[in-house]
Length: 264
Image (cartoon, rainbow, N blue to C red; front, side, top):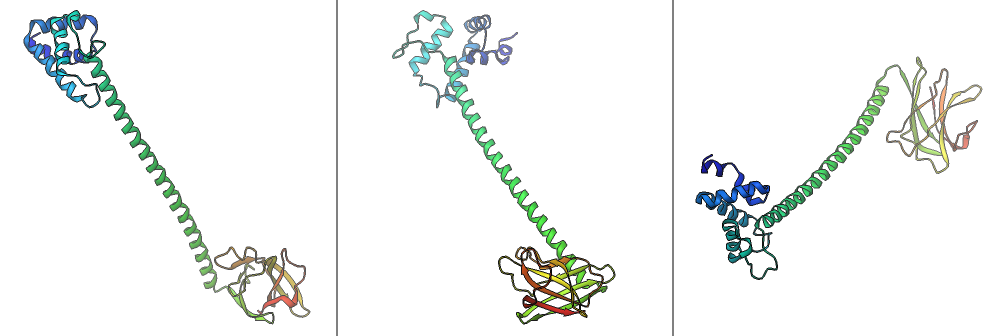
């Protein structure tokens, strides 16, 4: 192997890092003593690594560096004496410290970036979940609106207007009654909000004699955006009325609390 091939093999870098075994280290010593090019390459590698680690490794004076170089190339370990140091310096140890510190700093930065990225992902997931929930609510509201619009437009429905009575002259409501399917919906948008502990009750009426039939309560009045309520099916009715009753409803209408009434 030529001197240039030996230099390009990478063994000199491993030697400077202190990564060679005893036999390999001895071989590099011999090659450095025999070839000036190899000695110069080792010095160049050492200078480069010292500059790289200068910000984190212990300070090496020029005198210390020359002493280390003599120890490497002249193989006189007992003659090397470093001033102001209790023990001899080892350049491979310094370079190892520098590499370790640089690795730790790089690892800390990557870990910090990983935490930032994790937080960003969690935030995106949270936003996605909120958007999904909002979309679900909008779809549900849109479905209700479409159903209500379809109900109003259905020509098979008989629409009965219920006018306000003495207890609340300004109150009003509408009943949508499909006499073919017998389904009944009540639009209670014109009723005032019921007092605490009270509920509106809907009645299908026969007039002669007056026979009331309860067909449902307008529950969750406060929680509804659109005050459209499905109630029980009705086969026969001559009128519809709405009274205000105690929670749970009554077996017969409280006529003094009759809010709206309308004939079919």
